[in-house]
Image 1 (tube, rainbow, N blue to C red):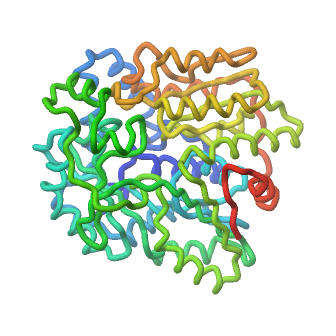
Image 2: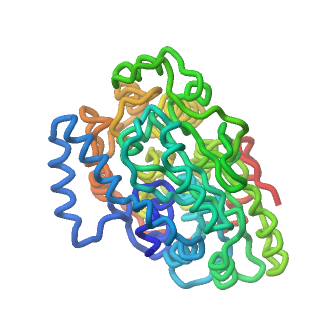
Length: 462
């Protein structure tokens, strides 16, 4: 099976991989990299048309678009770890770097890597598998129906830990038609070794992106765990025990229970999408010792923990380059664009989703930062008024904090969270910002490392 068929394009890790590799190739990154350039005009027309559909039709269109990326259960036997690793490595231009990243996906990390002109190798990828007959609010059905599929995926790929994830909140529209298998390398695959040996310069630095987020899981085998719920608006406890707002959400969707149904957790694991699997550390240490590289761990508690540090790093970098520092670009989930962030002289602040937690993280950053003249905000639409989703009115108040201009970027606030055209419109509007700058020389890693070491919200070890 071709790797780009097995791996979801509509996912955080894939979008960040493509966005960074596009930047390192000197290219912009429209449509999160999933649409060929020749198809862009037709895709824009389709997205705008879909935005005008009735709610039910719009949700169905979104779900079918996700389903179309998923593989059939019978194709799982053809998914191979080394094929996917080779596919990842093949995204990058053929040149050496003084620094490289490996590990957890993170939008802020994407901007850090772009600044120092370094590739990033994701530890985790999403392999979606088609299925039917599972109620979105009953995670136990998902595990029962796909258990054999997860076991086969793990058995055929001993380098992986398989995280079978079912999120009935953020991913509600998608999980009705497909299962999420996030695969994490616990051993360093041969194509990653080959890539690093060729592309990381002698005496270079290998940086591990180490997100410490963990989640309650149910163990199926040594390599296979099931995760009910995911990072977002609902808490870990709400996914397993419910709450008043969960009850109201379920009632609104016609599910006659007080709480979501799912298997009882018997432990915890690195969170499926964002968490770092430490089992790979031994291989990384051995390889770094063999090649004479400096091995560094960039540790942060949760995905958004890295965002303030990277935003401040960019602001400091712009100031030393003699550029204005008052333009903030707030990104969400897979809506990241390193190329135009730097071309427009924007300070990037990345949010995991558009939940109340992400809103508080952004507001906390703004409370402690000098005022921004301009704030542009791109909201990612996932199609559901999920538990803990921050309303548009709250985001408008954030935009009011700009001293000159506060606007949504490519986002129709009247259609959020079903504004699916934002995938095209955010990039289009970003390219239309008047003042642009030449792409800069890379920020020296030593400068970035010194800046990060002085922070209290991240740990740079090594």
